[in-house]
Image (cartoon, rainbow, N blue to C red; front, side, top):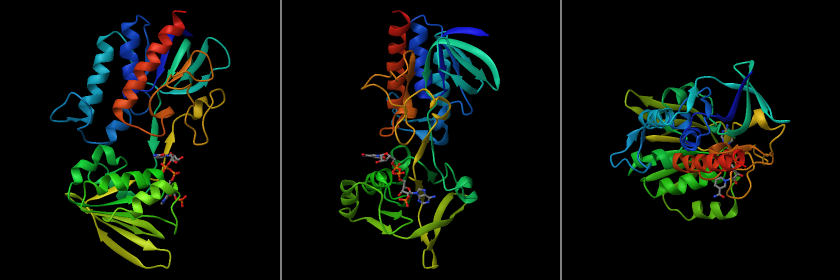
Length: 306
Ligand code: NDP
């Protein structure tokens, strides 16, 4: 079995940043990129809120540049999926693509999270063409247009109020007759005049043409089917952190996010660090993930050089 000092799991902004810092610290990190190199960023198109790019940058170029920078610093970046982790004792042991392959003195978990989608074929068809799971990332493209947000939790309320500041009108599609969101977030929605809440509604289909989304077909609980015209369709029905492989050893919160100690990346297992969206239910931005990857590498460096 191959023995490495530092294993980084996940090829998104958190993992690549951790690899850049760890390489420069002489830790010779090995990074497995996982099923979707680039991470969630690759599900969006143009990134306009990552500092350093006055004209924005397309997401593939941005994650590609992060990858190349980590490789240039000396990180060993590999295609491959960690399929099993044994964090019961040191060194930690990992299966890659189903085969026991790597032992590591320390590990940074940067496996990210996946936005939940409704699972409609039309939703899939228009992904990146009006369908998005990140209002902060893509809302800007819908300035002065009409959009819809699906969901009734804190994220949906937050995204709807954010979009209401940019868009002409925001529909909220809520499947029950109540929100799940906190009172404070609900109040913000109720006090925003250009948000219209469509209670008891489920999305049947996302409508569109060659130019992208043009509307949404909804069904109310009483059976009525009707269409609304929108240019953007935002999913806000929750995220699933990719922590399942590690839950046997690493503490998670009720939603599966890995718990870290204060602002550090330390988990409850010494030598195991977590960075990026797998431990962040709140900010979920490329820049915050990158920053937490930096913290994890610094924490790992301190741990390994102890
Ligand atoms: P939640 O799980 O809290 O809410 C998901 C929402 O989506 C619910 O209204 C749910 O409906 C709805 N939903 C789920 N599946 C479907 C579906 N298939 N079709 C239609 N609607 C669906 O997720 P959030 O992302 O909102 O929040 C996750 C956690 O993060 C929470 O603990 C939240 O409090 C926290 N958070 C806090 C924030 C803050 O404090 N500022 C901001 C954002 C998140 P139903 O209610 O019927 O199940």
